[in-house]
Every structure is written in structure tokens, then in C-alpha cells.
Amino acid sequence: MAGTDGRSTAGLVLAAGEGRRFGGTKQLAELGGRPLIEHALAALGELERVVVVLGARAEEIRAGADLGRAEVIVCGDWSDGMSASLRSGLDALAEAAEVVIVLADQPFITAAVVERVRAAAGPAARAVYGGEPGHPVVIRRPLLGRAGELTGDAGFRDLLGGAAEVECSDLADPRDIDTRDDLEVVRP
Image 1 (tube, rainbow, N blue to C red):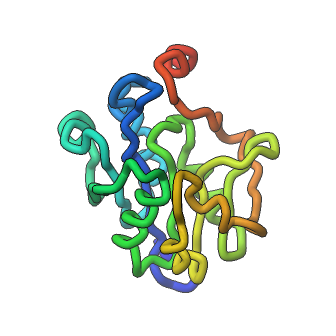
Image 2 (image 1 turned 60 degrees about the horizontal axis):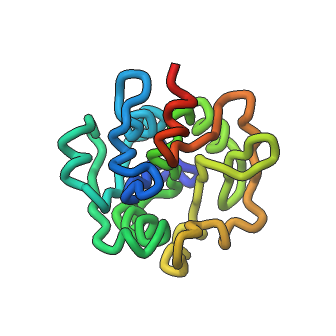
């Protein structure tokens, strides 16, 4: 799938956290018959290239989920926060014109949400739900080149000033699964 300047659009699934609040490997927690991480991959299904960044329990996740055609990157410094995972994933996607970033613990984000956010113009766009910022986030050149500035657990948040905000509450539930109680609330 071509990006805004003819180069490719890639997907990036951030899945490196240890799931401390969840009390285990939440990427493998089942919802609707499949692990949470597989829901994130499904949202990016139409993109020609997808990278998954793993960290804590990387081998357990590889063994327990169908990562399909996704390229797996293991972030050695995952415990430094989301910025370390982002830098690892974006390094692997250095040639992409735009990168769609999703989180492995948001199972209700769909391909329709990804496409709506991608349709927004500018160097960056993000989904909002009832006016509250969320994911996916789409980052394009030249903003992608600033990934090296990322620190801590904020991701691109500090660099997204002026990003297009795309309302998506009519398409998806943005909640993430942080605890086992969160998972039980959304299970049918």
C-alpha cells in the first residue's frame, strides 16, 4: 500500500510490555477466541509490511500467537518505556513513507479506523474518541525522522502537536486491556 509520497505504508504493533498490572502476558490473553495481539495485527491486515515489537516474554508470545507475516523485533531495552519500543520498530521501518502505530492491548481497533486515520492529511494524524486522543497514530516523513528524540513512556505524544485529530468513536471502542478485570468487562 503506497504512502503519501509513493513509498510504502507500514504497520507497527507495540507489544513489548511485561503486563505488570495484568499479572502476566496480556498480549496472549484470549478475547473472542484469539490472543489480544492478533486483534491488533488484524487491524493492520491490509498493509504490505507489519513489524511487531516484543520485549518481555518475547519467546512466549511468539510461541503462543499467530503473528502471521509480521516481522518480529525484540527490543532489548523495552523496560525503558514505550519510546524504546517505538525507536526499535521505526528503525526497522526506516524506508516507510508512513507508519501506522497500534497497541497490542486495544482489541477493538479495526482496519476501518486505520483507514480513516490514514486518510487525514499532514505529517501526523491520530484517532480520537469523544475528543480524547488514542490509537492508531499515523506518522509520516519528516516527523518519522524525529524518532530518536523519543524518551520515556510517552511515545510520540510530545511530538504530535498540530497532528490531525480524526474522530473514530463511531467505528471502534478505544479501551485497552490493562488488567484482568478490564478483560472480563469486555468478554461476551
